[in-house]
Every structure is written in structure tokens, then in C-alpha cells.
Length: 617
Image (tube, rainbow, N blue to C red; front, side, top):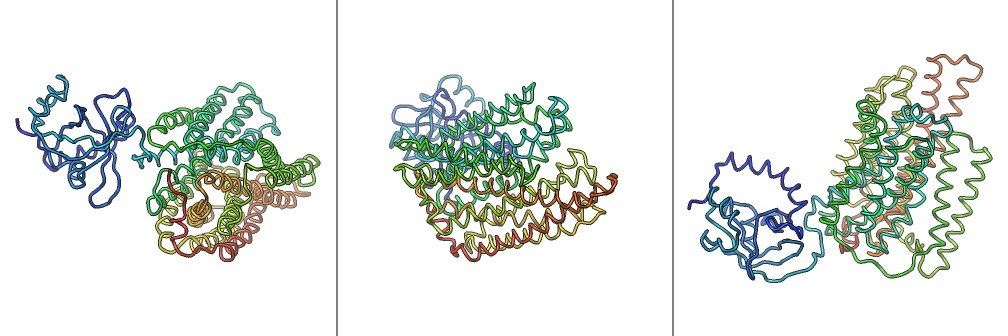
């Protein structure tokens, strides 16, 4: 029998198709019920990376036999032949194989059932590889399919972040459909923000204590349940409750996703690349949410803004156990008093700041909410100082660089959320863009952050995180100054597109290095906490920035309209004046981030930023 041979074009075509088919095959390959296809994990001869290839195989006695469809030209065979060993996942178990030996059809035939042999004869496969089982392992200590693991983590983070803005463009449709009052409508946004911001620390700590993969999957499923319930909502209270459930799920997913990167990827370049993807998802999620929301509202309905999360979340929950490592849960008690006090404090502070932006800082409910939130925060700190197993050990702030990273993310969050909010008002109210057009107007920001974060992940490995962070803050200040120059005659390309491109570069330079610094040196059992504090910093920064800058914009707008007859042109001019004043105030905030990076961050070389990251589980 002659072995099947393909020409260069046919071989390249098959490999091209395999790029799309293999990730899907990997979802079922190697499972306990799958006898036909396993997964072979082989190390690249040149790159040294671990690759996962789904492959037909059978176990016979103390060996595995697998067909060589391409003969000895297959890349996986060359890698295995060069190393002399590999690992295989087959029917839910993991094996270390050695002594690769090419055998003929007659020798391999007893290992396969008759129907598979007929297929092999029809195709003309004459060569097979036999490898002896060196060791059988019940569980792999590290996820081998790193690409798919990163996709799961990045998509989960993106899904959670974009839901902070995706409903914004759907609010008018939601208001008409469910008869929201103007006051209640803001709770569609605030309900998610309150639960998300209030439960972040608890979600991160739960991941450290009960297992990050387990809590990650739990958070994804809770998020899916909230999304499904929201899509079915028939009353305003129903939708608000569903958004709270979504926020609770997101508060579990966000910190555990970042911790899982440390568990899954080896320290150094591989982890830096993964963190670059994560930072890109986190930094661009808000802009992508506006784009996706515009598309969905324009072509489907507001309900699909929520329903779209359900199939994505279910796929993530199904794939996660297959590709993410299962870290051991820690024994110990959950600091319940600390959890209750910090959840209440964060929720009240986020609500108080949101209310200050829409009402006023002197409003009685705003003052009472902020005051009670601050009191609960002080109570939380006192509890943490006294308890033996604190929810948030204050030693997490002992590292100067980490504390600086937290502060810098708060600064970045304070300008990012405000820019998205103000510019969405400008493009829809002043330029008259439809929700779909408004969404695509933010495309440069999302794309720019993702690209810059990837470039920065390589740059940090050479020069360290300090200079990129400082440069990013300066670039953000430049973008905000450009936005502050917008006049009454607003045009998209010179007035919005240019500043968005500049801001995307600045934010991309900030998000990745601060993520690296924040989890650098954190003990393995505290990486979830460090991730949670980083997310809390950005969330609080966004709320503070929108409250302060929103108040300034509202006051300037009111002053411009005082004693005037509010025509359409006058209202647009007043809105623009208010927003540009807020952008001007954002410039010194960004410059404060620049000084913070120079004075606080002391990591200059790449080594501390990468090698000090917690070991993967």
C-alpha cells in the first residue's frame, strides 16, 4: 500500500482549513467518551513552544498507535521524532509517551477497529507511529492548549467589560419598551455598576480560596443567567434585577480571569503576550460595547444586547474545564464581616458618585450615600486590621510599585469612562449620528488600544514598565487637550477621530504595564486579590472621573443656557462647551498620572516585572 501524498498546494490548503477545524475538534478530542480522537502535545523544534494537535489514535497494551496521514512530513511527527517523547490526552487521561517508532499497516492493524481500517485503506495510509507509554498521569498540571485558554480568558474579560457600555445605545429603546421613567432608566446602567464594583474584592478573594477555575466558571454562568433574564424582562424592576445579577457574575469573572493567566502561562515572554491580550480586551471593551450595541440595536432589538451574551458565556463555561488549569482550593474561613462591609462600602460609593454626576454634590441623598459608604470603608479597614484571615490583607499595598499601579489605573479609569460618555453624547446629539454610526465612531479607540497593548507587551520586556506608563499618561494628556479644542462646528475626522487615535495609543501604553506591575510579586494565594484591587481601582476611578467631570460639564452647560431661549443650535453649543471644559480638566488629571509614574514606579528593567510574577499552578 502506498502512503497518501499531497503536493505543496494541497498540503497548504489542508493546513489552512485545519487552522479553523482544529480548535473546534479540540473541544471534544481527548474527552472520556471520545475513543477516536485524542490530543498530542508536542514541543516545537525551533520555537520551544508546546503545541496541541487533535489526532486519531488508539491504545493497545502499553503503547499508542496513530496514523501518519502525511507520512514523515507532518509537523507534529517531526517535533515528536526530534524530542523522542510527547504527552497525549486520550479518553480523559493524560500519558507521557516515548520511543517513537514508524510501523507499517499490517503491524498497526490490530490496534484499530475494522471501520477505521477501511478508512485508512481507502485513503491509502501506509505508515503509522507507535509510542510506548512511559507514565500515566491522572491530571495535567498545566493547560497545554495555551491559545484556546487565552481566547477563553480574553473573551470572558471582554464580555464583562463591554457590558458596562453596550446597553447605553439601547437605553432609548428600553425606555419605550418597558416604560421607564427618566430617573429609573439610569438604574439599568447603575445596577450593573453597583454589583460589579461592590463585589469585585469578594469575587477575587473567593477565587483564591475556592479555586480560580471553579469560580471563573461560576461567574460566567451567573453572568449568562443575568443576561438571559434581562433579555426576557417585561418590567423595569425585572430588568434592573437582571443587570444586578450580571454585575455579580462579572465581579467574579474579572479578577479570576487575570489570575488564571498567571496560573496558565509560564513567566516571561509567553505571559507578557497573554497579559497584552488581556489588557487589550480590558482597555477596548468599553469602545467595543458601544460598537456592538449600535449594530445590535440597529439590526435586531434591544433584547439581543443581553441575549448575545448567553451563547458566548455557555461556550466559555463548556470549554474552560478543558483548557484552564484547576488550581487547588485553600482551606480557611471567608472573612464575612469584611465581605459585607466592603461590598456595602463599594456599592454606596459607586452609587453616590453616579448620583453626584446626575444630580448634585449637595443633594441630600448623595451626601448621605457617600458619607455612609466612607464610614463602611473605614469599618472595613478596621476589621481587616483585627481579623486573622482578612478578606484583603493590607500588606497587598506594601509594595510601592503595586500601589502605584493601582493608583495609575484609577487615574486612567477616571478619564476613559468620561471620554466615552461625553463623546457618545457629542456624536449622537451634536453630529446626529445613529446608534450604529455612533458605535463605529469609536472603532479607532478599540482597535488602537488592542494593537498598542500588544506592542507594549514586547516593549516592556526590553525597557521595563515605567517608561511606557509615563509616556502613555503624556499621550493621554495630549489627546484630552486635543478634544478640549473642539469648537461649535464639530467634524468627526479632525475633532474626534484624531484625538481617539491618540488616546488609544496612550491607554494601550498604560493598561498592559500597570497590569504586569500590579500582580508582580504577589503570592500565588493573593493574585486574585491583586487582580480584584486593580479592577476596583479602575471602576472607582471611572465613577469618580465621570462624577467630577460630569458635574463640571453640567454646570458649564447650564451657565451657557441661563436666560437664553434653548434652540437646537444653542443647546448643541452649550453641550460642546461643557464637554470641552471637562476635557480641559482631564488634562491635569492625566499629567498627575505622568508624575505618579515617574515618582512612584521604580521598576526599570524587565526582570522584576516579569520574573517576579506568581508561578503558574
